[in-house]
Length: 58
Image 1 (tube, rainbow, N blue to C red):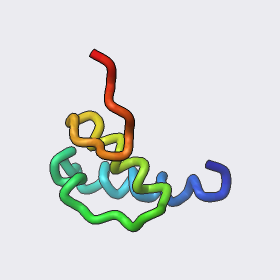
Image 2: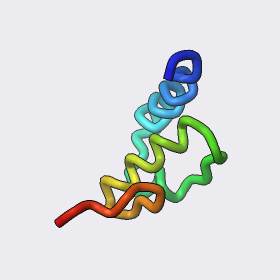
Image 3: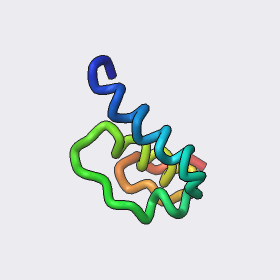
Image 4: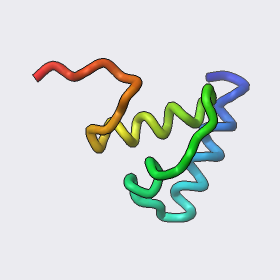
């Protein structure tokens, strides 16, 4: 992450400050490719909606 960690920290703090739900976060458009998009993908994965991660084994 290094120097670009600030991008993800800023996005995470915004989400927390707004008390946004996971559904509200994934309804938001993120630039591609960006590090904050990884945060979006993690939240989408928690909802079972991730598109950039391999399918989980059952």
